[in-house]
Length: 328
Image 1 (cartoon, one colour):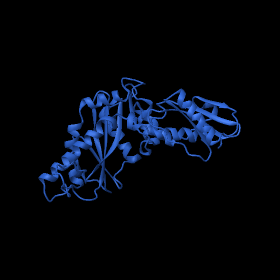
Image 2 (spheres, one colour):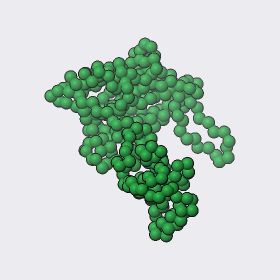
Image 3 (spheres, rainbow, N blue to C red):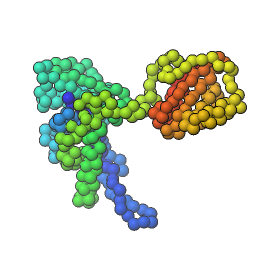
Image 4 (spheres, helix red, strand yellow):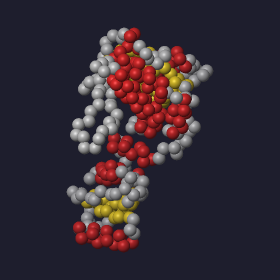
């Protein structure tokens, strides 16, 4: 059970914080330049903490072996005009993976990866199938919580890489970091970050292995709601009740309803949503009874508990979804 992903290594690192006296107006720290180049590193590990030697993609037309000077052992180097991976280069990485791990139909392996277009080609799928590799893509907008490399590995790797760059600039005054020095700096960071416990904890904290369906709470996936294109019918809205109330209430009626409800419960607020009117944004931890008036004779009532409104974006999404379903 493996996870593969890419990350970018820049020749102009992000400097760490600087300790300076209070009141000093100008505080600086040297870097390699103002604008750098990005080299892509492709890394992979499994659920028992075993790593596959990385692949580095350099932003060049032709690859030079000197670019890998000081790189981690058995690192594969390739060139790309943009410095990013594409379908052809990902196939080369998969061939490198097969050569290292030696999967087969009798000894199958699972490879988790994101849904980037470079990972999805007919050649890659056929090559994986012939060698007993099952490709599983993470759902969109979930890699920040589901991808083991993102959860436990790339953060420490970038921290160690920035430290290595700072050390180089400190001990080599007047020199800058170019493409030929990135491999050696990456090796320093990779050797410090690629530990066995990260592979084990990466799959454990995401609930992939050992399998734990309740490992990640629902609220961690709320960012995906902003691009959710699923059409929901009014009858399928959670905790919704269709009714036929009187005509759209006036402002006085809505205020009176809110006052009555506030006397009966201090934790639940009733909000009437009428076309063309604004509503007060909820606060975190608040419970709402939302009554959406789409027109005479038609409303939708929604009860939103504390989990539903842990983010204002979620609440607004629910309102818009309800209004769209009613053809507002």
